[in-house]
Image (cartoon, rainbow, N blue to C red; front, side, top):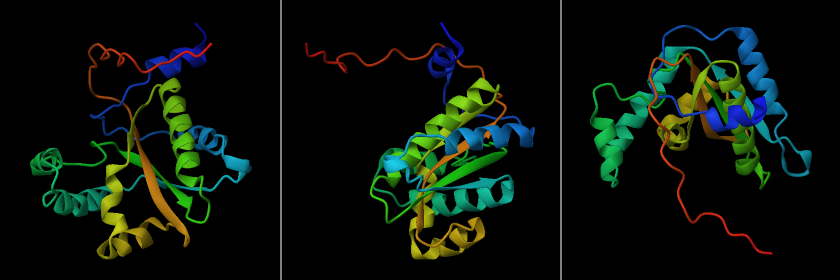
Length: 186
């Protein structure tokens, strides 16, 4: 098996991190991989916000906790009730990927960028977790101050985040892949 396939098959979502900072060289490689993701008509409608300020990530999580505690979804409420609730799972950093709201393919293009970065992170010995739940607070008027602190450009909306760091968890067996998800037409 080649290294690319091994990285794709080996990458897992990490939900517990060491506080060790990620080296700038690794962050730059990961960002470059995000920038080289496929995008519709090569528009590259993304903006990457690298957040190594853990206090800002905590602020986003605190705002999201307030929202999730009032959610209709019982699972979201249960997670928010945890004393250690953190959208970013304790990672020392996250990359927030925002998309140009005038480009219809931006959500898919940004998703491609995050997946490229997650695979790159794994290949560099880092753990990552692909996150969309962080954005609830940023989509509300009371979260505008967070958009300013994140310096999200006008005309862009945050779609996804990638928590990054060195894993502090031991992963068990990967769950089996769901059956019946492939159809061959010959």
